[in-house]
Length: 430
Image: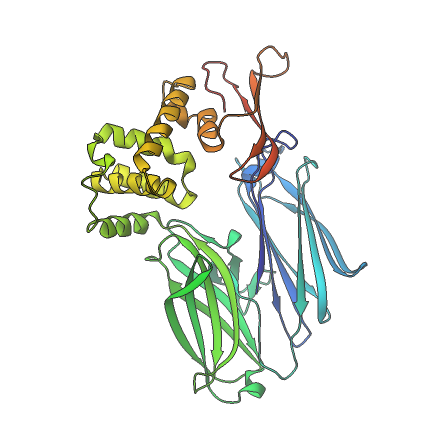
């Protein structure tokens, strides 16, 4: 299975305010010349330090180290600098490298460093096995693609006369309605020697269980290499965690080989529609949310936003924009019912007392106090163990350092957040 590692944003005192954000993944393939590994890198441009160019554009760069190791021995090593496109502002940039390797077991290590701020470094490591038998049926890893287009040029992202751009983070956001993937099947001419079927499906992963929600098939003739470029319409796929599974079956539909890759989907418009349809048959007439005014409902939903799973943030935003009061009441009730099965109203009232205090503590003329950066973090992580405020440092704007000895929900210790006020105009620190 293709492996992927997410290099996520983290704000702490010990690293720069904007941490380097990148997606690293790899896929294994075979060829008449031997096996090889493709390493994909996607760098978030806004997290890279920019340098002004002579033509008034800006550009960023990262230095990349790649190691393939067996035990204490480095089998292959690569070092290169990857430049972002120069422009009025920096954009995301990508790269793909191919590394031919003898078959065997390896440890892959990758280090990505901001070329203009070396303190910003991310490290990645994974174990991989290159094992493509000469005559037995085999599959390459699955490569999820962000875009595909015909190409007559040569380049690292061109394969079979197609320019294939890897999908960063294995993530399909709003508007990404087609799942496109590439895979190769090897030795079907020797291992099967007759027409066969490729079945590809999407399973929803929930509580460790997989449930198939989409399924398709494609007939193939035996060949030394069967390249597959296939698409699936995921416009109606709700938000969640999924896996794409590709099975190779003979004419009797017996399973001969299988491979899979995990991905995430965010589809708030479908979530909102499904939520309202599901709630149409549910009654909460006697629950506390029925007595809340529309203004109280909106205030309550905004207050719990820092506590919501990310995929629900857009869902709640949509049901508020749609002025769907039944959906708003149902979501709010369901949220507090999960927190307290016996007395959800009690837990709701206690939380709203805290939310009101935070609203007052960090009040802003443009939004609720719990929607400011400090208020958001207070609701999300609770009261800090210590707050240090500095207002008269000559070389810095006013700033606060919030220290948490322990954050239970993330199982982290000694966490710090820095808030500062660059405008000096209002007490709204970012």
